[in-house]
Length: 130
Image (tube, rainbow, N blue to C red; front, side, top):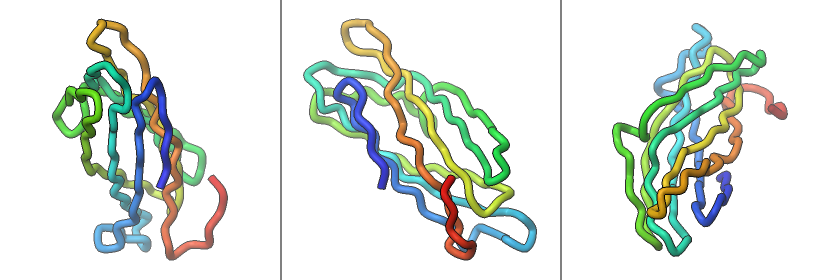
């Protein structure tokens, strides 16, 4: 599990290799990742956009940007959390993901909540540091 807190917004990520969706012999490796975004501050915040950098085992970077997450732009009151699960394929058996969520506080101030870098590793390959 990976965790990062920015301005009282805690982002926790738990990646899982999906053996049943992966086809290593075809260079297709798939992971799911569960994300929890918790508002531990005193002010309501809303997630507006996401920005991911996905780096495969060869160092190739794929960036993903867009509104919200899984079709939603959740509003989190103090003490509330939002959970979702998404996934990513890679053509290599390992990689790394990191990113940010652009948040807007009730005061109107925007800030980037950091998504911690997390490792994507196939359990069928020798583990290496990404």
